[in-house]
Image 1: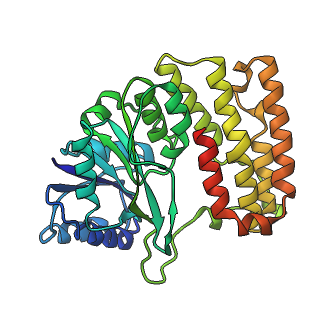
Image 2: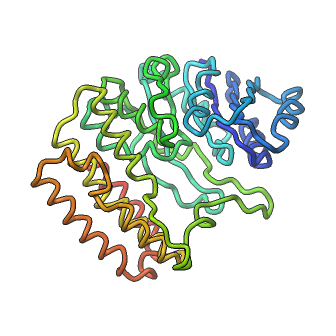
Length: 348
């Protein structure tokens, strides 16, 4: 069984090269590495053409003539592949252990080749902490209820695994530009009858380190001065839109599902980002998010029944107060536990 490791690439060649070095220690032999380069302006093309002459695995490389954006480039990395399964990595992520792909293949073969799934991950700076988006190794099943419970686990792209022919069946450019196309595709697949699996082993290293080089981060762009205050939404309206569309396109949308999508955003994700911004001394950014996430700004909000609109708006008020006034030291101290609690809550 061939496994395609699919990497949407844009600049930061140093991270990609280290990623490829880690992949090359895999014990499993039938691997190809697919790199879809979204018109990088650094030395990506030169370095990859140099490396492919001696690299352990086949390197499939395509450089786009124009920048296509995250979603299209992600989809293209899988379109270029030829393996039975696509294992997605960011260019600054990698495979954790040398036997991980062999472990994955053994699992897939022993479980009748399920359609899509995800694994846990660690960060290179501290591998002792496992980020547990998967609580078990096994087949979870299918259906819209499962898709709704697991949808947030598809926001982080590294460690998502798709059976290639299933991906091609549902592949679409409808949500290019959303930055969450993988959430749309995954929820659509599961709600339409595809089998979801999870692996609680951390197969992925997130945020690999290259010397003292500092990666670009959202933290570098958030407003810390009141003169920089602006309305922001953290991409959360886009998340709501792609999730609603996934359930609509699967033919299972209902008032209950619509309400649950809004509820999970405003009960967990929204207050978390308020606290996160405050923990980085970016109170103006937090206030910008308060303005940007006012439910009345979202066109889908009107589709809720009146009683559900009242519930969501009340939730918005309560979580805004919590997010702005909970002591930041408590949030910082218990941040890993909060992450675990959020993931558990969103699965229920």
